[in-house]
Image (cartoon, rainbow, N blue to C red; front, side, top):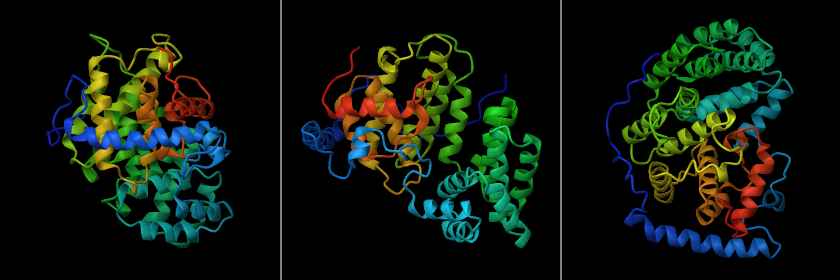
Length: 365
């Protein structure tokens, strides 16, 4: 079994295994929850909370699972790309610059458009030396390969061709990581992650992909003892204090629950699983929630991914007040993971958990 990638350094203090709220965060927590309770009262009287549409409050809007996650510029460029106007994607990526998390997010979403490979190929013919065109074309082939409509080796070769055109860019390696997550051996996963992390040590999407795959390794020892938890906590500790990787241990717990539930080792209803009731899980949830209270990043392109994982965990752990605060921030931007875990309808699961939290009804144990 290949070893885990080295994640050295301890910039953030280790998680307090007690799971108690940090004293410095108590006042902020009270303020947030007070506002949530007021909004929840409004929602139960028939009106949606401020800043949230009626359709979002009902959890049934048609675009609730859109992977663009509210990025208006990305939405416009994707719509133009769908019509064959690749110049909008060109302009978007030019202005994205070296914001690697945003670049990876935007290229991945653009690449998911059904005809992205064709239009990116046309762009590449017009500008053969364009790293943006080559990377978008490579990620589009990756998405097609993941859907079973493209040869995986061709997609890998396209990523390897794009990488030297912008050596500092981790995005071609993100493409290889996406492929390895589903279609490759673990050695390919670890190699792609090492290359990606060398270019951007805090790469958000890359860490999520690594954790999702490593959560599938067999478990040894106690219920709360798994190497994916150790890796996620080390990554969070190594990152700067304001890094969204602080939420990665919560992601690791959700991915491990997916594996356990899919194999029948945990109930299909996460609220009945007890997965978030142990001391380590409680400490991780508290640390991540306290981080959110102090460091919430409205500008991070994948912030809704973190918010959804936190809301899922708080809902499953029977903490409706904290979950309500998170649902207020999420609004209509639900994400398929983790609400679909293990085999649920993500939109329905999100809507039910949101109504339960904002209605002040605690989930049954």
